[in-house]
Length: 101
Image 1 (cartoon, one colour):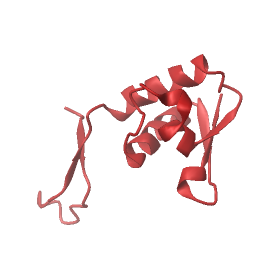
Image 2 (cartoon, helix red, strand yellow):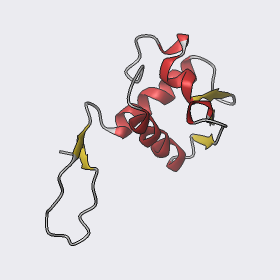
Image 3 (cartoon, helix red, strand yellow):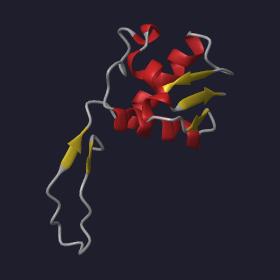
């Protein structure tokens, strides 16, 4: 349980959802992996871009390498709620910055 979420809103609450996103890892699990990576690679106190987190050289072999951007953003929201990072908007979504604390 908890490995999926409805993508379409059920406005009438009639169980009429038609699209579900299935996660291979829960966002909180991915958040933990991202923070362990940030600590191990010296990004705590620094900034990296969403592109670097998704496709950078330092993420080769990590569980979040190449992951869906929406899933990475959900994981970052978990870290933000824990006070472990802040996300800053860039000119494009891949240029969004993440500062780890």
